[in-house]
Length: 279
Image 1 (cartoon, rainbow, N blue to C red):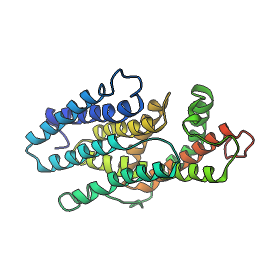
Image 2: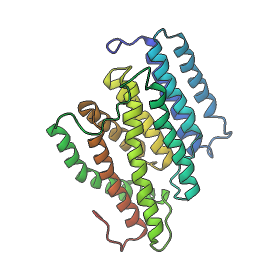
Image 3: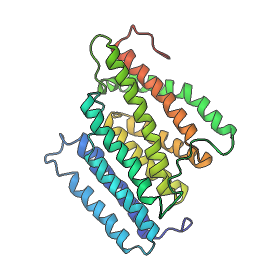
Image 4: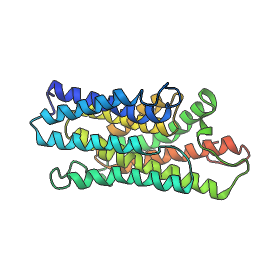
């Protein structure tokens, strides 16, 4: 099944990615530029039902179940208020949606498809390439964020709203929010979405598709400008590292390193006199 994919399954994967892009980032972030709010919903909905039709015709029960779960996740994230607000009510509501999309797939597939969603934190063996990847991520994250936030798209930090004067409570909310979302990113995009797709498709196809989902959600949240390019490449590397190690440890460490410099860039933008790491 992994070596030669039927054309209808490739079509289902492509339609899934198209539906996700239409129903999550295009519907939420660009609702104001479409003449009518249903403009991105119609093609996205048609693609969603197209995937459903292809699943119903597929003879493999495992394929129907696993892609069916991913279709359900599209609906949940299309309804989620994906924004960077640190308001308590917003964080609670968004947190419930984010919790649902990582808990429900495991519950639904636990008995019929054990092992598809692995939840493995520690690696089975130590590989030098994983350590090199983590080490390289430090200067690379700092350099890319410097270039992106202060040269190419200097308005990027304004997606996170902070008061004019430093406020310890708002700073804590920013740090906690960004890091919790960063942990969720790897648990959802890599452990869940990539885990399910990898059980059905070859590595390159599964990784390319999970990177579309990864990029779509983070673009919806805040990462505009050159964000789609940066996030897509980052998502591909995260998927590739997970494929080799089958461990969440390394991708979580790398993401938290990136989040460290992300928080630093935002704080440096709002409060230039504040001492932050790397800035």
